[in-house]
Length: 143
Image (tube, rainbow, N blue to C red; front, top):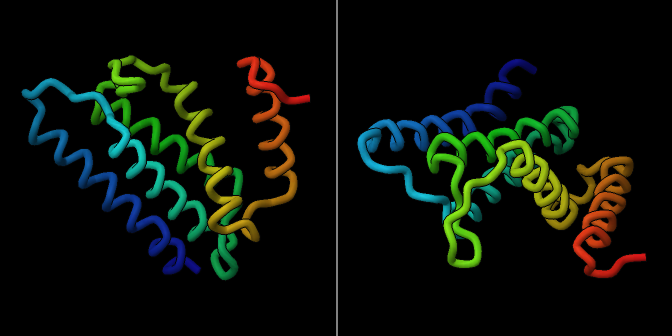
């Protein structure tokens, strides 16, 4: 089992250390904000990690794995990009806790498409409730 777990964590750790080492090389250069391509890459890595780690045979706890994936997403944006993103062609500083929460929702949404059998029913229900709440807060409809 220990070997399986080390394989699960090896790729994300190698990937994140690669990202951080690039940042170290550019330490004297101003951090550029994360653009759509950056965010898509980090999201894809998070979904891949989430689906692989929670598939049959590995069976890691989905909520804990989701927390690791979303925290890593937010951490990379914070450390590599100085907590800044480009949204609507405008540079914005993001609250890292809010970013982690949004990343968590987006990762669940993608997991429901990519690996729906891995997503516990309770998580799917919470996701639906939270997205409806957000839609109502944004005035985008809902019930």
